[in-house]
Image (cartoon, rainbow, N blue to C red; front, top):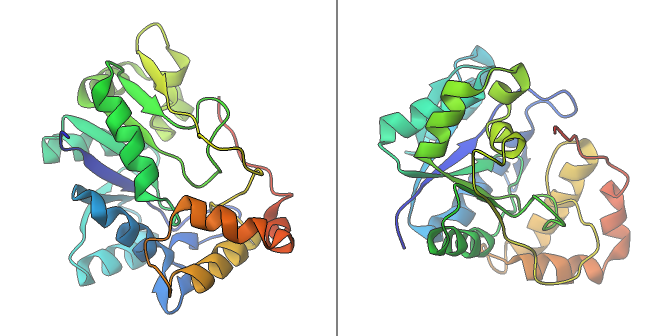
Amino acid sequence: MEKVLLVIQARMGSTRLPGKVMKEVFGRPLLSYLIERLRPLNSKIVVATSTSDREKPIVSFCSEHGISYFLGDEEDVLARFFNVACMEKAENLVRITADCPLLDYRVLDRTLRFYFQSHFDYVANTLKSPYPRGMDVEIFSKRALDIAFEKAQALEEREHVTLYFKRNPKLFRLGYVPYLDEHPPYRLTVDTKEDFILVKKIIEALHPKNSLFSLEDIVNFLVKRPKLAKINANIKQKCIT
């Protein structure tokens, strides 16, 4: 499989749960679990954060653990990704958000295989009936990113990296990878206190047995514990279209 650059979009600022990506489980920040779960792909990982002083905990963590990072514009995240891609001479990029610490590398691997076997400019598993929220994967070419960087004008298109792709299906070939199994609408992302409580319980239960526990392991765990899944069942996801 061709190589890609894995870019983790991370920030300390959050209206609903400030500092969420550095909240700890077993004395480790959530960001560390995400990076651990991506290692089997053997692709370079770059944490893309902003130049704001409040990102210092993220920068310190990356520096201490030898993780590549990039400091870019706080509001123009599209420019941040463009500059990361240029710096790394990447031809294909994966956008991952740091609030998805349970992302299963197998989900990403499946999406990558589809991307490289197809002729799409942008492939995601979130365009239609999605995977559980928190397994979000987006893959796109540097060529597509160049076009978006040059043409995107709206503030929300600069803030949300892939929004310009979705708004312009005549310019870009958009592909979708569906989830193969039926499942309850679990939230496995971290955007609120309730989300963190659930993710913490999942890590505490599954990580000691297997640090690379799968999406199926998570689903099976929650199916057997419906009360846990209800912790964040009422949280509404913020959507930008």
